[in-house]
Length: 337
Image (cartoon, rainbow, N blue to C red):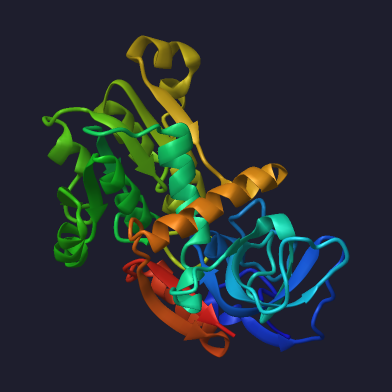
């Protein structure tokens, strides 16, 4: 099989494609010949040495794949060779063949594209966790989504429209026309405008989804109405370039609104602060698997509409990372073995 390795901390050019033997599935495991592997911001953070959950380098990361099962291990009851599936991977997803437990799989609908399917697991599950499990979004809720043009931002929009919420997004100016046509009710140019200043005189928000971190969290707290919640699901403010910067890391951490998120402050403002990290949900494998299958159903029904910005061959993996670094993407970037 072919794999994209991160041999050391560095810019995208350090990525290295290597070949080795295909793995063999164990008890209740299957092997998937990968059609596509999703690229997520956590992959970039791992390469930059900023992702604490990443395995020690050198390592292969990657958290989601689509493909066809070509081998099953002992005790597999629900799947067979030839099944088209999507799966979460606990690292190692940037490979042409991966091993997954049978509970981690969901069937790709027969009428749907197998490559496109790889764009759903991480963005879909993150959005589902934030909006359905923690945020409990309902009709009429006002929701602010940062990084609205990214994979999570577009997936979250589909679920927000499904629930009848009012969606405000932040994105660079070049993405506004697409996002408004897609369904956002209002879009703010975060590069040239302070979203807090633009939105502070409007009605407060019931929910804010924020993968940026630092001072963005503090500004968001000020925009919540009573009963409002902010969900933190990343800290992209740490990665303003494509190399690790300790100065930027310290700057971001120092701007986190620590005093505003203590229990007494939250009690007095009637607000909530929550966090989502799907990489810490492996102990909930069966539950997460059921959410993935629900997302496949919603895809079939036309509720969610995945957007693939680019499909990039393994041999050009640095370009996939660059696209995300430069915030060029509308939706997902996928790697093709």
